[in-house]
Length: 378
Image (cartoon, rainbow, N blue to C red):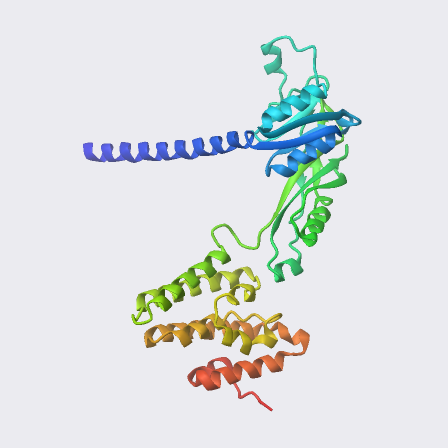
């Protein structure tokens, strides 16, 4: 009984310490954010432009302010790699504004309140976000409805990713009235998608005291093809690294290394299939140039994921690994045939004939698993 209690206490203590470590890490990460360096060289620049410049330099730093507060205010200030919280303090004083930092990444500007005289008053007149609401203080807008963002189909097909930062004016009704691009993704198609999407968002408007006001608000929009933990570039690098090791020691029969290569292929090709992202861009870096050339005419529009297994079999001298690779070649080839998109381009028959020829010449034993009847090759 005593041993059970000791074990329970030990496990509880370990869990508590782990939670404490995670919490400390998150807090430190947030604290570090407001210490991120900013470089400015402003002379008689509009305050709104200065704010936009700071936003474009640091991801996940945001600003909230009443449009009236910054209108026509100009800033002259230069700094090199100075912490953002110190920079904000300096420009706020120059603009005769006060500010609050909430959640360690969002700065809210408001007019100087000369009637605040005690800490007790200061604490008693904060809202849930810690923002002073007395007199001219601004409380931030809150998202209450938005549709899911659309990832442009053309961007997906071309493996385009990026992050867009926007600032938009939210009116008293909680609608987005104006949009400014603070930081481009580097791809016009993603920038435009983010701008169009932002106009659909509905907010609980910002408030000055209890009165709704219009205010500028900034947000990041991340367009990522792959979920966290899934990196196609890591896939490519791992495969190339294993093949390099094998080629540099050609006199050794590397069954273990080839087995790992096959496992990596299976893991990642499955993930590509689930996420329905074009894979040809990545397998082009992996398969042999001869196979790439052989399938050239279908490269730009047809999913050719099965070719990694065909390429693997050409490299492998181990029958048991080849057998496993053939199973996955059949699996992914069958998926491609069943959902053949090339029909839209009038090349469905050409593609199926190409596949049939490949199987008949190299894998005659599995032709019937893919095709129920013989394809006319004329």
